[in-house]
View (cartoon, rainbow, N blue to C red):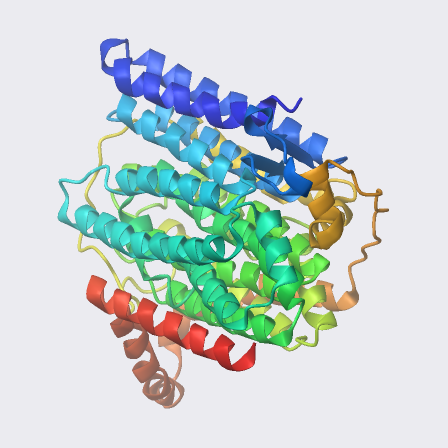
Length: 602
């Protein structure tokens, strides 16, 4: 069974190289079938590893080079715990759905596109399974380079070139920041294995070095995650990428950084820092900034792809809020939310690809009323995705959000839970508003508060088939009904508890000693959590109605409302200027602020 671990990386890399070498010399059907078969095989292997890891975390040492000198981890190893394996499964499922959608939907997709997608898949799987910092960096670079090429796939268009350039420059700064943090840790400990670094730092407490390393590593991961104020590249890249690539970006790529950061923090820094308030407060502040800024900007966009990009920022804030609690329940809720909300966002992006081909745009004002006839199935699927992202009680992301709310409440941040529920409502409400405007013709065709990207629809070449929608449909159904998997929250909390047991986890990695089995914790949904779910669901529909008909308000109400809101709206839109120089300045300023905060408080 352990031999499946390297195969999840090797298989897509070999297929990617094969397609790049001979793809242009074989019939068109061969690259399609090979890419889809490869993604399906990786999905099956990742799912098998997830089920196997639920009983016992799998530690795989490449070359069978086990730690030898007093348990010092010299070799290169993958640590396949249930949470990491679940993220690998999410990546492979999303890539499989994107490839199936591409095959039936785009006529111009060529073998190099498939090669990039498979290399991207290998990078993502290796990124979440790696057990040492340097290989995390290596797979992050593989994932990033493939993503840069995918975002600029139609590079002849100026806006695509600009978006891909923003993506590449800012993410390169982030990865170099992470590399500097890795260098600091390696120079101090002489080790790259996560457990080895954590053990060395626990024996020696260098406060200045610890603050520097923690800041650099945190910023490196948060840039990749698109956490505000490191998020500016994200909206530009997601908007210009083709729908299949953008679906992977929004469903998996950004949120994987949160998962890996949680493991790095729990294994490297937590044994020394413990669960102090300094780290928790800083991360929670960034989480709330992301959730609020992303939700508000999502509501101010008319283009659905940009809406989804800002929704990713907002949802990422909720993930970071769960991680910031530094509790088992918070980590479990965040990882579950990554999976369920990611599936829905990926499905939504694929549907937007169909919308663009059929109607020529993804801008709700440009398409006002143009989807009234002949697009019922697409409208229904878009609505299912939007409602699912509103976390309806009992379905989809709701269970994961209850874990995040519970963790925030038990750590003394109960006031943030309803705030996050409102952010969920606002971002989902923006999508519901756009669906109503496009497919029902509701609301005015012009809204001065929204930022529109286009002036008229432009049809793209593509086949108007309906069967490619089976890919987003299956992603949507999977997201909705994961909530009914027996004891899923309890298994997630148990996996998080095993990761947070530093001594037992270190013995497992370095000595192969399996820790005693932990009984499944009980998890019940409180009445408070049901109420928060109702807030997010009902609030989404109220937000959509407000966005559609706020211009009908009496002038005595609308006037003061405009006066109060206009300066803030202008400021938010001005900050998102599209200039790499401005975005880099924000990144540097935020890094300095975070470093100063932890220097004073740690």
